[in-house]
Amino acid sequence: MYLSRFLSLHTLWVTVSSVMQHYPSVWGHYDVCKTQIYTEEGKVWDYMACQPEARDMIKYVKVTLDPPDITCGDPPETFCAMGNPYMCNNECDASTQELAHPPELMFDLEGRHPSTFWQSTTWKDYPKPLHVNITLSWNKTIELTDNIVITFESGRPDQMILEKSLDYGRTWQPYQYYATDCLDAFHMDPKSVRDLSQHTVLEIICTEEYSTGYMTNSKIIHFEIKDRFAFFAGPRLHNMASLYGQLDTTKKLRDFFTITDLRIRLLRPATGEIYVDEQHLARYFYAISDIRVYGRCKCNLHATGCKEENKRLLCECEHNTTGPDCGKCKKNYQGRPWSPGSYLPIPKGTANICIPSISSIGTNVCDNELLHCQNGGTCINNVRCQCPPAYTGILCEKLRCEREPGGCGRSSAPGRAAPGPAPRRGLCAAARKRDKARRSPLESLKGKRKEKKNSKNNRIQTRKAELN
Image 1: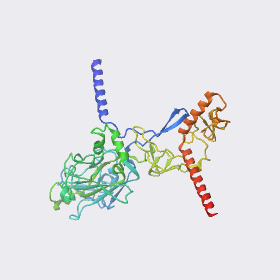
Image 2 (image 1 turned 60 degrees about the horizontal axis):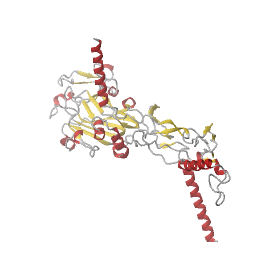
Image 3 (image 1 turned 60 degrees about the vertical axis):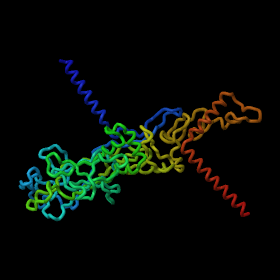
Image 4 (image 1 turned 45 degrees about the horizontal axis):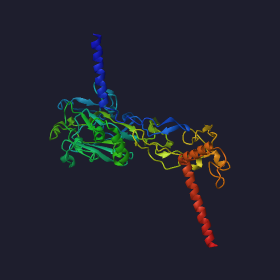
């Protein structure tokens, strides 16, 4: 008995494990921005590309409807039942909670009975078009990580366009067209995502898969994000390295999955037949019970956290970056131009951290992040480096033997070796070579500026000599 129970549990675990292996997390890497490592110079920070976890973005959305008075119930009106379009004794009344269908019911928790939903007015003004724009705004740049899913409580619309904005609603681009007849509605040949490829993944298509009028089990419309990922990562998204590489090197692909706003344009309600029944216009309306949008805050691979502050999402920036999207370097950390992080090389990527400016060196002599003491030195209260015996300088970047007579292993006179035991000369020579290879970006920048200044002075002196 116990053996059979154990074998049953083991079989269940194997099944669950295999399913989990076949469907890995789409964005399963880059969850750490930095980690401490030990080197010859001591404990230092190792920086890497990082990004926030994907989450349900509907929790942070602001919704607006156009026209603003398109929601049913003010004044109260009757409409026909979903299952029986000729039972027209249902009522929508905005003044009664049980009979109201406000926009926020598109985003509440599903699973309750009866289901809750937003509903438009009926098509009582036919033949004037029944057009509705539903705009979802985040006031933040979002990277989509899963399919957009819209669940209609009424029949799915005969005609609809899903649009996106990358500039907070100032301009819009189509994401996908939906129609019962794509050629008639939008002058486009019908296609599905399965008809696309790596080379045509950015093509805007019209699909007839999700426009079928009144059908009990046909309420859902998808915009397929994962199917597009699969062109690069494989059918079960196993080869994420390939997808990351494409996103890193192809800006148009990265921008395709990036939004600040979405707009659902409802152009014609479900009719279920060729002609509109003008005797029963209360049959025709839009009703949406649920909208799902999964994604992450875009932080340019410089943050793992994204917080809500004053009803706005903000990246918790690292790598000495700042801004809503970590899109610029902090003050005093502008020693080189800002750059986004990179997914490459897999799996840690490249952090592209902002480094201190020359003018900010006096703020801290050293720290445990960027201005770390070199060659095994220790930073004391951010004001000085305590250097090993063989080194000196502000950041322990210079060899002490260079200040001694004869230098580090150089001859003090022709044919004579510099004083000091041979092992020390060898140590200094090796250390000097190693020190040159370790020169920090900050020192390189200082050297370049010094060379530029000297060159300018030389030109001035030459010009004066010519004038004299």
